[in-house]
Image 1 (cartoon, rainbow, N blue to C red):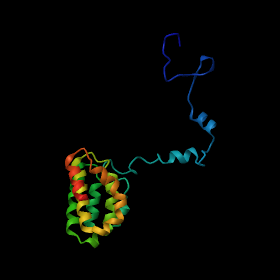
Image 2 (spheres, rainbow, N blue to C red):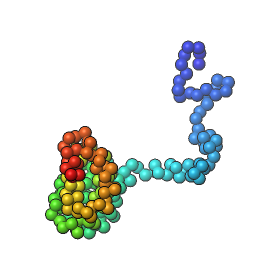
Image 3 (cartoon, helix red, strand yellow):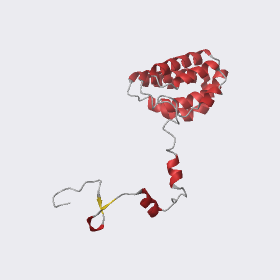
Image 4 (cartoon, helix red, strand yellow):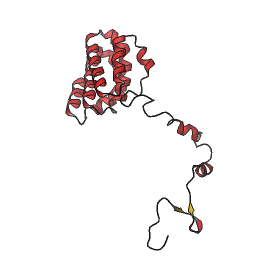
Length: 184
């Protein structure tokens, strides 16, 4: 490069003014095959082998597999939770309203099994769902679930509380109000 002209960022200058290409092989040679934690490069990058969301749909729940949902045993709850995994916001909204209705009509004993799976879905869906109506519906489901299970919900509180607390400060006031009502 001449005087007064900037050097493009894409070209790093090596010795004698020649461009030196960046190389992952060169970085591996310098750093060695394993890190101080005894992890190979393959181990480090293996976590990125699966697409975000565990291969689920864009609006689906990343932390819940189809086997987890099927293992619930209750066909209505299973159907509603599968609707929550759809890409379409209208389907997720219908699933969340169906789930709220189911949670409000069932006995607390019957809800104990569904609670863990719902909390997993809640953890993964709430921060990722762009539709505020779905997020509000999740808060309303949580409210019904907490009201029904009461003390039995305590064992799930540690997993649910971080997202629940964040939802109390959601940018949409309806979502935040629903989360605060569920907490009260």
